[in-house]
Image (cartoon, rainbow, N blue to C red; front, side):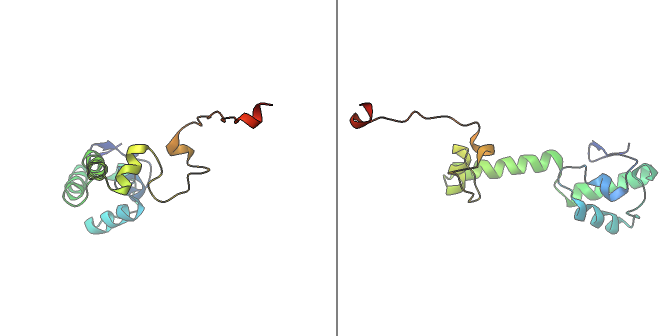
Length: 127
């Protein structure tokens, strides 16, 4: 299991797939990194030499925000939206869907478990 960008990537998988285990690197980025460094994307991650691993680490550090740095960037972006009180920021604050989804039904992931509200009865309903 080679350690790349602070993550133990699986050695038995092909290189570009192993790179996708790093937060911030997807399939397209994994293939692009292999092409940039001249690695065969179909080689197994365990076949990398120490020199290749160091080249891979330095390339990822220079060109891609990954793991902690990327997570911190995402949190800062959301906090900025909350601070300026824009529509998306308010949706984040209230725990509602941010991207225009309906909330009359569905949206249970963001809203949480149902909270049943009692129905108010009028004077006519009592009899």
